[in-house]
Length: 338
Ligand code: TYM
Image (spheres, helix red, strand yellow):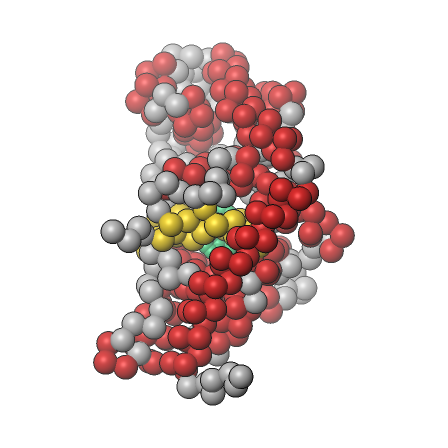
């Protein structure tokens, strides 16, 4: 039986944090044995905001190494760099010409990020979700495992596939591109900031204390959790709104300790913040230790990393080229000659 295919990616901007891990990468790891798995480092997306060209290549390699450190096994998953597969840029252009501008203008992330950028907003930032649709559609992905914040982008990718490609260019109900489904897990899909339980943990937040990065040292983790915002109540509980910091930190503890929500809700129901924070510190340090150890083992082995990315690019290129040819032909382009 054919296995369902998944595709996902993370931008190599700044350091990856526990939101990226718990909301996305951890789910790829769990799915890779039962699903045909493609995971890319989306470096073309990383240049949509101002960035440092001296760091881009290094950050791209480090992000790929973190995928492996988190448990992505290159024997089970295809790991590649987005810009190593040129079909992404070409399909993005074709989809650009099929997508109405106002579909992009209503994207929440574009609105939020463009407000922060002021007058210096690039076309790339607006176009970001179309590139993302190209990433997904090229691989005929059945499922796209992402955090909650990507839901709207996934809906856009589905609309483009269905309404702008298949219904317009598919003859006799012929499907040109597969319409993907988002896969958003109930746990970990929205990890919130340590300094404000109402806003998402984010790589781009100027305050590093707002997030726990996957490569933070035990001392730094301790410091950040000790400083994390709390409230004046004693006893932690899941409230879903009234106590956002308790919801967030208890939720993180439930996942990292492996105990689950019901058990930790009982364990911490009468606990003061000080005792709880120590539990969270220990659970966080313990769960990041194997990731950090594995990362340190592989990060300086350039040949090992290069070989994985080279093989990944070969495999990804072959799948992506086949889809691109199908789309080119449906859109009426003259076949390449020779
Ligand atoms: P990026 O790099 O911003 O985020 C990578 C993944 O991490 C998830 N995530 C979170 N999950 C839970 N809590 C958080 N606080 C949190 N912050 C981030 C994101 O939902 C995402 O799954 N546009 C994508 C990258 C991308 C992509 C793709 C994803 C480009 N092409 C194709 C899937 C398929 C993004 O948000 O990257």
